[in-house]
Length: 312
Image (cartoon, rainbow, N blue to C red):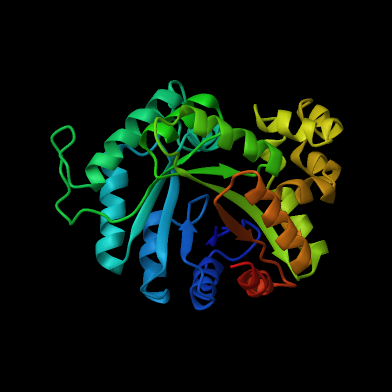
């Protein structure tokens, strides 16, 4: 089991904090830093800037990139650029993203996204290995690293089983993670890929400020297919029912209890965090990717990162 760090890219914090959080993660010896993208930096640009701040052995995991927004050539070229410019192993994560990001922000359709995920995973894996796909081959060296597939639904799990080195799960409680691990094992023809879980984290820090930030991060998931069922099973059916009425995000945020974050996160004292990590491992998860909260009480997630070192 490994503990890795994903940059939170919190929208209520200065964007440049992400670089300092990456630097701290490297100083603490975490084996990998995940860099996605939301509303600030392009992921490849941020990774190229973060690379020089990290120890040579620290791997970069980029994405997940929305497969209906970025085509395989774009993803492979970006990953190869980061690998060449930073001189380190780079892994790539692919996913289908959300209607807000794909349809509203980018003006693209998510129609057929499950098939696009499978097609892109196959093509990106080949391109990163230096193979020619649709007439294009990398002009930079092949990229040493993993192909990661973000999954929840059965078709995405099947894609991970066929093409991925790792499957990553986002914002799930341990029992639901265990169900998806079992689905992956059933779909894999040989040994299954490793499974990582992203978990919002606040360890050994001011939980009041952290809960406020982490609660904002789940507003968009409460009524989403699959996630809503998980939250109902976890005992938050009233919150899901309210979310399905389409309330203002401010009102929905006010209805989210801290206990909901506890169900999907690694939050609390170091001993509570260790117990939660064990519960994921007991459900078949191989790697935990912590997304440290960053607040005025704990800028950069420094306290969380320092506490998480004990989990390594």
